[in-house]
Image (cartoon, rainbow, N blue to C red; front, side, top):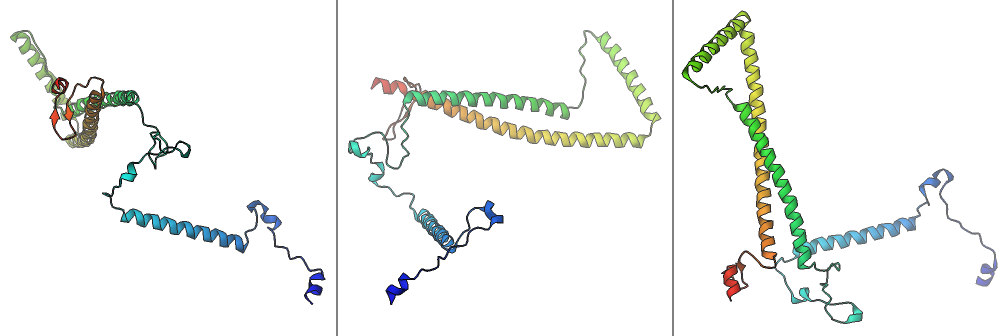
Length: 242
């Protein structure tokens, strides 16, 4: 009976394809495709969750000597190749290369520090100019010239008072108040900029000092002292005499 059923030609059941007007969206996703995609997504989500939990449970003080083991490729056995297990294969830089990089870093930091210093000086001049009282200082040779200049200044002040008396005093006061308020706002703004510029200058100065100290310690003939493995401080001259 089964042989008769198998001998009869059966109908081919074709899966429905993507309609013509939706060809630009690619192949039509079937339920089995969705199931495979959903299964893969859930597996990845579980792995990420497990890794996050491991990170939270990790002891920062945990250490094994196996972490420091060095092994080469399988063809060379356990010969040391300078590559630590877990690294991406980056080779350690030589002392000369590191010293060169430190020099370039120091040059960049020094350039930025000089720029920050100029900005601070410029902001300080602007701040003093706004906060200044506007006092004019004139240097004279003798007392006679001093009396003559004093009389001229008094005449000029009298003329200015006459000019201002002709106008409305209330309008003059309002203009003066507006000018002073604008001057105060500008001074506050400059003070904030000056404080930030000084902070940046301090940071760059500290970075330059640290880089100079590193370069001095990395030099072929060190010019600064240090600390031994036992925690004993030493100076360069004492170290050389030993």
